Image (cartoon, rainbow, N blue to C red; front, side):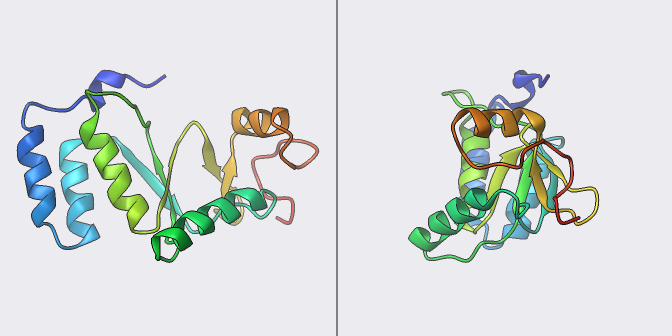
Length: 145
């Protein structure tokens, strides 16, 4: 379980938001993000598992509407919504606008073989309950692996 308090806006949030406005590269955004919330970023994966085509389709639609190319699936510790989490929301928006699909670590894991983003069992059950086509059984790796 995540300690939501570690992602509450720090006392210098306004200063950090102002600094973000002057940053010109994603690398600099990532550095500021890591300085602000050192445990938030977990990893990246190049794509979603092909067993879940709806994930890739949705990601591509969002990128097309924004006029950008899909970059990577970015896994973060948690995404908390609310008035006290402005910076987390802003960092998510920065990376989403750059083509990243920002997801929580409780939702996606890397395939053991190809490192694609595979939904966790929790997400697999949620998709299945919503009538989304998923593999017959949950697995921590892609069926073609």
